[in-house]
Image (cartoon, rainbow, N blue to C red; front, side, top):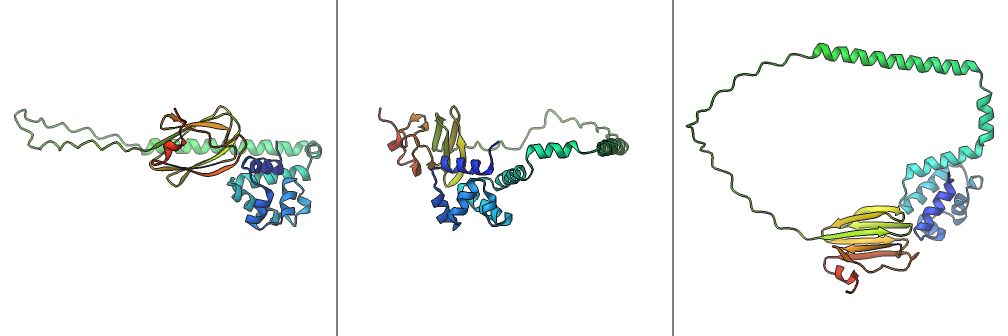
Amino acid sequence: MASLGQELTRERELRGISLKEIAEATKINLRFLRSLEEDQFDLLPGRFFVRGIIRSYAAYLGLEEHAILNLYQETIEQKDHPPEETAKEEGGKDESGDRVKRIFSYSIMALFLTAVMVVFFVLIQQKEPEPASSPKTPVSAFVEDETPPPPKSEPEPTRTGLRLDMTFHQETWIQVYADGELKLDAIRLPGENLQVTALESFRINTGNAGGFTYTLNGEAGKALGLPGRVVKDTIITLENYREFLEEK
């Protein structure tokens, strides 16, 4: 399993972002960011301060904060308690402790089964017989329905829009906004496909402009850039989307 520093470095490099850029944006010392990516937590001023750095780092890259903090906790636990020491500690526990755990587990299971039986019994007691259905009053065959039929609604006109279909050939970080709303912010792997629709516009950011091909409304699009190139703020609208299509 990758450590915290390895995972952060990987996510940053996939987005084409430098440590200096993060330091300038978050006002965090560049030396602290480098120590974080190298898992050298002893060079950072306290774990409370480290958590603050991690939150700022994760927010800037658009990562899920709780997942990154959990990975940090696992990393420091591995540093504080290597696997060999953990095995020795577990081997030193006496059998009485295991017996207590088994008894506790059996007690919990028995309580759970008892609770289920009580609830089942209460539901049976509270269930009442359904009332007999009243006979339906026959309707005269000679009574005409005076209610006029509802007016026929005219079909709504078909609204045009944009459809973006993407096929990924390389590992690629991609971020797509549709009509100003964030629809995707993820790393896609080779062989994966993606479809996003919009009424008026797309805005695309990517860390690997040549890592995928795409179509717009079913027509092949031109590459946004070379493989490995970071391209940001590509705006595609109903008015200009044909400029992004390949020439036939």
